[in-house]
Length: 135
Image 1 (tube, one colour):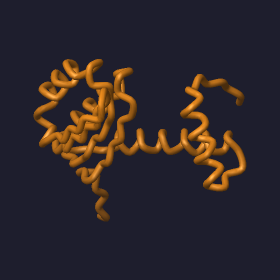
Image 2 (image 1 turned 30 degrees about the vertical axis):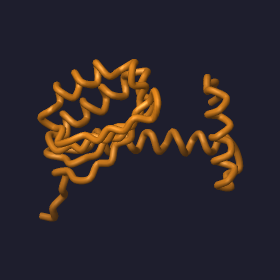
Image 3 (image 1 turned 90 degrees about the horizontal axis):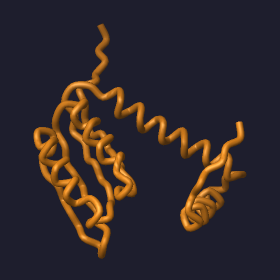
């Protein structure tokens, strides 16, 4: 299947340097792998059940989202243990340490991803109650 994408030139140049440095044979292959990683990450978050511990790290343009971000953090305070915030000029880096119901952490992640001013959201699921037992 062929498709087209609108990607900023700087991002595409960095992507090309990255896949080439890894020795991949084409941009198409690198894109397929990137899409697969994205899908797998989504499925890990969707499969989490019970109480989870997670870190959510994201960067954003401060002035465009700070009011909304405060509202989100108050709305999800039951799952947020603490945050760490660093300013880098007009953009910020934030880490949120979460412990709570998987559904609430998922909802928080999806809310953050919904803002144009948030550049990237990275989730590390550290612990969840999804345990299989032999029986």
